[in-house]
Length: 149
Image (tube, rainbow, N blue to C red; front, side, top):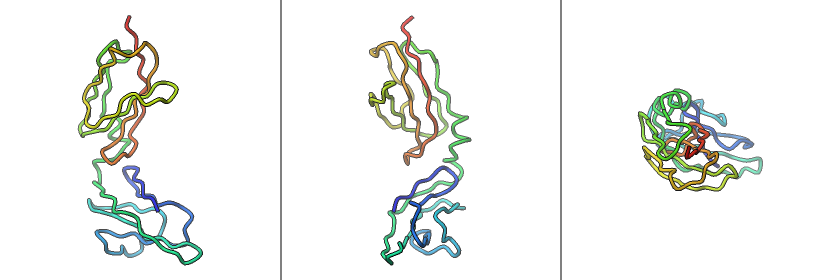
């Protein structure tokens, strides 16, 4: 079973017959759905059972409540200038991971806590910048236009 975090809610792989969420290894009373909204910073996991009575438990997913709100965080992150001729700056209140891809999806650059990217050696064109939190949770995409003019 996989667990994902959207900044507010934990999501387990859907389609199982039962779910039980855990906080620091202890079952959470009433937390028996495929989603769970944590109220405190902690490590969460989920146990699932399928229709054949087979069960498994996810790895622990560490959550920081409030900091990883992707909608709020997305508004606080600034990416400039755009269009860009050489250096593009990323200003964020928290460490973020970025990946830069060509318009056809080829990964060109990937890094953690990057505050600037040098596009000086790239051809003019359109690039996609994907910004995620340190857990890999999506925050936003930014279309960058590289122009040496």
